[in-house]
Image 1 (cartoon, one colour):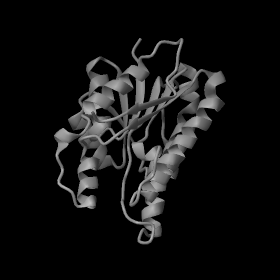
Image 2: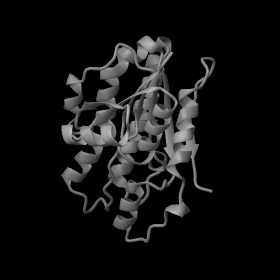
Image 3: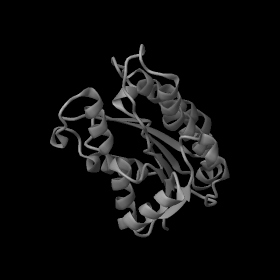
Image 4: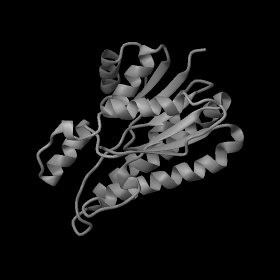
Length: 225
């Protein structure tokens, strides 16, 4: 039976690779796009994908999404990052990262829960090493990712009886456009060969999605060698 997956962040990095892998093996992929224009771009980049439109910067926009009766997974791979010391980060930087990285995944998961329960599906939160430890300059981003870990832990306990599995994936630095942006904010040269390949993280997520019914993976940490 064909599986159906809802993905955020399918336009680049880990999410794009995962979407491509799922489509190649014959699964159905619903990619969330922030605008109609972006939805058209995703459809061109990922032949066979279905798109829905909601802007994660405005989490309330997910309320009106029309989703299938059953979903085998929801993978939250979208995120934003804006580094800076607490002394300089303004309210907009804090609220944007919290909206996109935490509030939107919570809202989207709630909207999708009935479909996830119907399929006894899996929720995957692509977190970050920053969700395990916070470092200077990373306060707002790490706070959003620590919150995402709390969301996953609470959801896991709440939905276990409904057969919904919840996994947090904590990749270390991964060679994605976001990582290039981070290096620019840090004032460092960027060498993608020094970091985890997005394909590696995507394959790990596929392993979680394909796990047999007898087990669950609550947390998965992936680090560069």
